[in-house]
Length: 265
Image 1 (tube, rainbow, N blue to C red):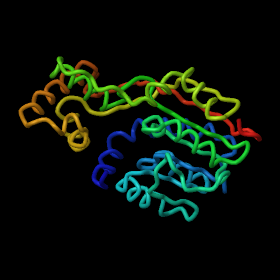
Image 2: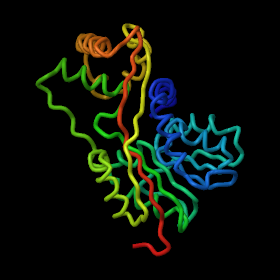
Image 3: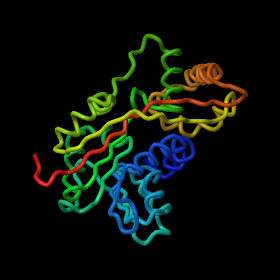
Image 4: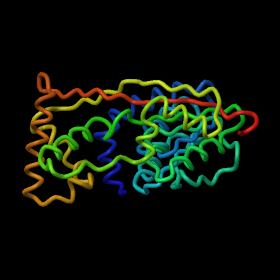
């Protein structure tokens, strides 16, 4: 993914991932100066940047070069923070390198999400925390909900794409709890929290989302006439939800924490 996509994502999607990242960061009991934080699938830094502001020594990883490039810009004021291109399923850190490892809307999308959880667990110290967040239901929140609804309305005979296995498994608190426990964590707690996305309604919505839409695979693959049809369905979906020219969408998120035990299971 390119730097242009990273900037489009930051301008549109971070307004909902940001509050969830703050909620995840608040779960870190020992957050403060020098706390070693790993942010896996860090995106545009919605979690890494506030962690760095809190004085943490942040390592933010993402597999997308554009995200890492943007992260490097955002973390440049913080000497103890760095952004690294890395696969979250194969972390190149020694065991016990961090006090806490977090992944907000990351691990649940990995092709091998169990390996991702195992790697999160491996790289935290004994007693260290794991914090994981994922959407409660597909396709997620904000603009992604609107796009999915518009595509269904425009192409009712097309089957909806199946969500990633990790997304489906970790979406419910009980599934998340079981998965983190299976990864060897103790004191696992999972909860549902509410996330909110807000933006303009009407044509201003389309104008604001245009660049992000261009990176959404199902939409990008359409011909110009089909895109116009989907755009009309998007406006219909937005207008049904809008109040006083604004769109406010609430989405549930599953947020869970666990601790690495003294003796791994």
